[in-house]
Image 1 (tube, rainbow, N blue to C red):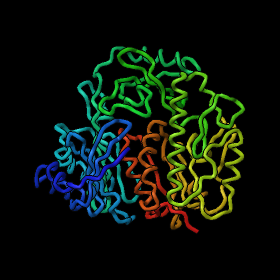
Image 2 (cartoon, one colour):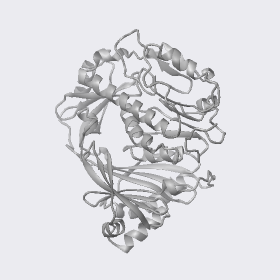
Image 3 (cartoon, rainbow, N blue to C red):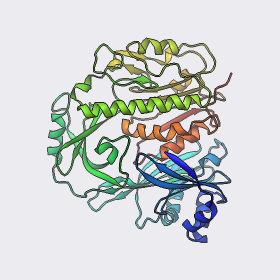
Image 4 (cartoon, helix red, strand yellow):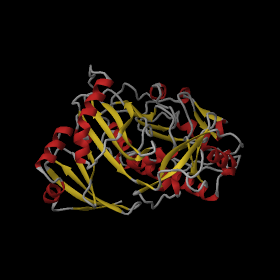
Amino acid sequence: MTTQKNDNAEVCFRNTLNSAEELEITENLFECTLNIEDAHQILDTTTESEYTRFICEDRTEVSFSEDGDLFRISTIYGELATSQINVMSIEEMQDICLDLMPDLYQLFNIKNEYILTDTYDFDEDYLFFTFEKMLENGIKNPFQSINVVFNKDSLNFSIAAKFDSAPNAIDPQISESEAIAVANEHAVNENLFNSAKLTYISDRLYNLKIDHYNDNICYLVYEVSSSNNDGIFYIDALSGEYVGRDLIMGETGFAVAIQKSADSSADNYNSELKKYTALEIIIFNSWFLKKMNWAASAMKRPGYTTTSDNYTTKMFTAIRNYLKALNTEYAFYFTGHGNMEVLGFRGGRNWIYPSDITGNWHFVFLDACKTAEGSGWADAFKTNGYSNRAFLGWSNSVTYDATYNFSEGFWPRVDGKNAIRQAAVDAAALVPGSGTTPIKFYGDISYTGKAWS
């Protein structure tokens, strides 16, 4: 992603928001003042799309596509931390949000209302809402949707992000049973899959792309799953061909990331790799490496030193020893398999428990399922209830594709200046679809992640 400063910010901005009415609507919806301070032309090198981001004096960000379409507004970095408890119920605040949506539809040039598909209570300050387009056949398209972050204190929007990828098809050409049969042909254990539903996936996942993909299109597929399996298989709803799979954060853990291995003696062993295609192995490993590089680079900006870029066969022992460190300026990022009680290595043969943690940690992100369903891990790292400390985890199960997209937005925002909580809320809003990124924060809401003594 490259950025070029735009010296004609004010003129361009006023030409894009076409009327005084739209300016007023924006300021009222987001409780902001649109006095432009700067603007940048940004080229997203993975999609080859160019957009303009305007920065206001109060740190409000307003982004337009190269066609002049408004697709994102955020006041998250200009808001003061409050953690006030609003006496209104979630249902009452949801009703307020619904009442405000027609104005947002007008700003985003959306002709038909979308369906509210998810309401997520992030914390004392923020509610997440996801609205998705209902197609003629009753299928909801997560890639034609709006994510809204609602401020419980001001009762205004803090973030609104529009996604608009057109579907390649509306009606399937194969049945659910046919899709299930194809998925079982590619499963480790045959006849394991028994449930299928129609949905859409991105070009990145459909074509297993990472460095360049088309964000103007999404693909109709059957999402095939099973109640006792962690994998999700995608079958093309038109051709009946196997497209690929997504992982529910995998079977194997790694810290500041590690490629998965088919070597059963390695701590990063993944027994399912024998059923992956060669391209899938390359792509998933590339995604792991990307997350490693993002995390390692981001941790350096607040003042941490990366202890290891890549653990290999001694990874489990090295991490357990690291978690018993007694120094004072340290952070930890883990991505892989986990829950409220354990983090897993080698397909569940080695485990990290909260009781293995000592010391007073500053910045921790456990990028694994349900690690923030409760405060157990945050308490073990002594980040919960302390100043200048932050813990992030997932309050529910998450897929690898969604967390990769979250990481892509989150780690560039970790700079020792932005509050970790704000960066997490901002990044979660950038991932389309309901329930994709149930991020949870424990700690000091104003802490920027900066290393300190």
